Structure formats: structure tokens, C-alpha cells
Length: 91
Image (tube, rainbow, N blue to C red; front, top):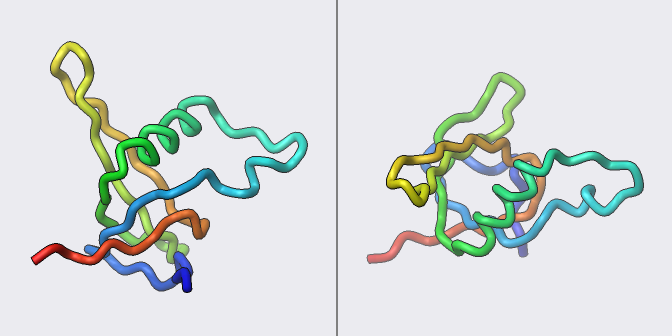
């Protein structure tokens, strides 16, 4: 059974597994940079860590990708949909 995003805490590791279902609704606008970020996170199949919970109780992740020129590209994403799975720590 999938856990709700309301149960996430700082330090939890999750992996994004699909696009949010709301994106399929008619006239629902999602910026192309956000679509690209989700696509990259899904394809990369790497876990990310919840680094903060904001004032409204929404968990946030941050991630980075290396550009072709060697510099880093940073992203921050609120997780307020159940499009993720919890990742257990390897021992």
C-alpha cells in the first residue's frame, strides 16, 4: 500500500515513479521545465531526500543534475501528490 505525502518527514528518502494524475485533466497547465524535471527524476530512478516541510505541511525535495559543461543545475520540488514510493536504506 502506498503511503500518503502527509506522512513524509525530513530525511525520508523517496523515488518519483510517475507523473501526477492531475496533469491529464483538460486545460491543466504545467510548465515545461516542471515536466522535464519529473521526466528526468523518473528516468534517473535515483532516490531523493525530503529536506524540509514548509509552513503548510508540504514536504520539499531538492536535486541536482550535472550539465554537459560540468556545472550543476539545482531544482526544488514540492511533493503534494502520491506519485512516489518510499525507499528503504541499504545496509
